[in-house]
Amino acid sequence: MQQKFLSNLILLLLLNLVIKPVAIFGIDATVQNQVGSEEYGLYFSLLNFTYLFNILLDLGINNFTTKNVAQYPGLMAKYMGRIAGLRLVLFVLYAVFTLLLASLLGYPSDVYPILSILITQQFLIAMIAYFRSYLSGMLLFRLDALLSVLDRFLLIVLCGSVFFFTLPKNEFKLDYFIWIQFVSYIVSFLVGLILVFRHIGKSKIRFNRPISFLIIRQSIPYALLIVLMMLYTRVDSVMLERMLDDGAAQSGIYAQGFRLIDAFFMFAMLFSNLLLPIFSRMIGLKENVKELFSLSSKLLIWGSIALASFCFWNAYDVLDLIYTNDIAKSVPPFQLLMLTFVPMCIVLIFGTYLTALGEMKTLNTVAFMGLVVNVGMNMYLIPRWGVWGAAISTLLAQSVVAISQLYIVAKRLQLNWKFTDITTFGLFVAVCFSTGWIATLYHIHLLLQLFVLVSCLLLFKVINIRLFSSILFASKK
Image 1 (cartoon, rainbow, N blue to C red):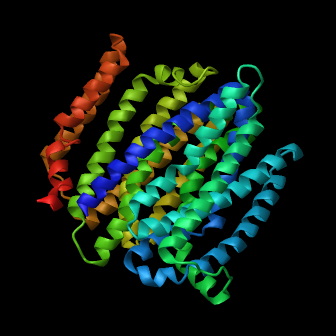
Image 2 (tube, helix red, strand yellow; image 1 turned 45 degrees about the vertical axis):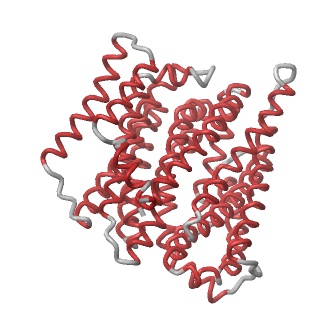
Image 3 (cartoon, helix red, strand yellow; image 1 turned 90 degrees about the horizontal axis):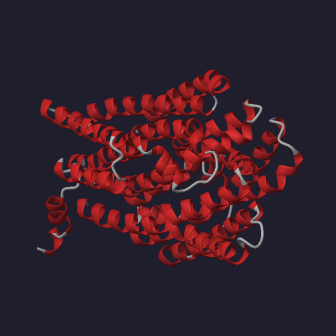
């Protein structure tokens, strides 16, 4: 399983390194540069608004499917058509609820055409994720990897073509981007449908009330966890836009830093996507997951610390590589969001293990704590400090969740860290952040700083080439 994890992680990283940075920084950031922070800020707020309650489209079905397909592949194949019928019903409920809520919050009538497209887009995203849950549950990670980047690849090709043929002669409009993104999701949906039919077989779509209620009842704990995590992660931009007089502009400034965190988090999610079915399979077979857990957690958490330290000390230079507007204003919240990236990665690894164990009550309790901290701090800090307040709230909420999960998993797996382990970890953190501080003082080039950080990862055996090689090629011996 360690071999399967590492080999597919490498493939996922390569695909995502090639595709997603170009989509996020080459396309998405360029759109914001072209249309301005205020116009993009409104779109960003609407996008996150549709994210807040997209759990109504899923109700935890994807995580439930991934976990159970890995353990009972034959049984879950029979449920596919019935789950698809249930999803259509959920889409209608989600669309009606979101539009009514938008009306209650006082969104102007001219945003409803965009909001309707984004609502439908959420349905397509949910269905693509559902198809991927079957592929990953069957451990078809290569097909899952290709489907995971297909929509971004299409966005690059289509939107890049529009940039090439319209700029700088004509003004680029946000509507172009919205429609191109929508088409990309439609094509990805159709490809995902074909892949699942090919490996499971066709299944007639129908709504079966008893089975739907059974699936919902078993999926509700997963649904509650997802909605709680989505709220304490995504609510910031919506509260900024609604609570401040210049909310759209503030949300746009916040988006510049959040976009990078979102990009880094996409890569971190690759660990979770691989580990959930693998942990579930190993737990089902009563195999020891301790070694795989230690390997994956060290890779992601220590790597996130190195990345966070680099971006924290070089925030302006990093943002300046991507954006043309409001860079100085975006630096402080971006620095705090980069520190937030570390607890977010802890939550990914530790939360995935607890999900595979079925510890949903524990996860939901901890996530609710995070939501209370985030919303409460946002209510207090946003009117006073704006984007600073939103970033501080996110950092505190994610830290509370991370520390809680770390404590719980340490007890479950009996992770008795030695004094030398804690000392080594503390030394690694100190080296990473002191390197950035010294580099800032002496204006050391970014590439040299990256070289030093990669050297630290090798020195502290976060990237252990000998170990990785022995695992990857074990089956060939």
